[in-house]
Length: 255
Image (tube, rainbow, N blue to C red; front, side):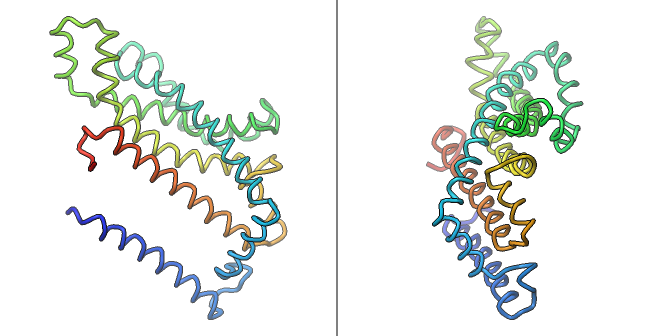
């Protein structure tokens, strides 16, 4: 049942506030030791300290750069391949089983191989993000294309359009809203794979800082960076949702 946007926002904010109060109560009343869960004040102070000395901004800059390049590379390749195998059965037979096979391989298992192949620089981080998102994207985009109504394609054939024009003028525009949603969802996965890539053989980034903090039992830094990752993920997700409403108004989104 649909609800007013103001009520939706009120409920969402209330949930976050409730969780924050529960956290404050659990730590303030001594129910949980600080080594396991530091107080909100301790986390905020530590993050402010890291921001003041520039550490936070260096880590954030490194992580944003890596996820941007890795995700854009995966998306730039997955979109044409997904459209291709979603439109032509021969290409689907050639590519889809292989992609389906690879996507079940755990990304974690590729970490040592990626270090061997690409070293410990940014290229290795790009590779892990690529492996973690590309194969899933291809199959989801294929499904987006297959959901284009056959009546649309039949109309194109009735008008005598060649396959290339049917693909570019009918299939791709019709599938674009679904493709955009696929990119939005897979961006969430990319944040996960970014942290995984930075947990091993890195010298900067949000994941690297979490690993270093673990060694010195700096739980407040770990919690702070985890929350920061959540905030970044939420911001990018909501930004893509907002762009979706602008780009695809004809799909019934509110103006």
